Length: 143
Image (cartoon, rainbow, N blue to C red; front, side, top):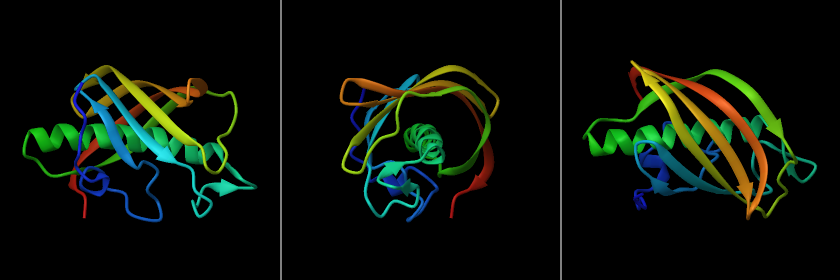
């Protein structure tokens, strides 16, 4: 696995205040891990915790960061992607302000512009969420 020093905004199409990943800490074409510090000013924080929609978006943006790394290697621009499906989402608990998420995805299948991943979100060694997510990648360049 490679550590990526590229600034996250060069890898994903999202822009503040909608950015839910801070950096890519490990990457290869199958496995990718990002980190995200849950901050008080995050748009998905309510009553001191990151709500489930924020967790889903964190996983989706980890997928986007993976594709940004792939595109960077291929000398291509960042493309827009869309959540195609979320299955078997399980929240064991919601992360609190000040906790750092470590979100890992494993590509199970990639066909045309669709990618199916298994995702796991941790705080330290504790697994706090898991899901299967399908991402559809468009031909449209991110702005």
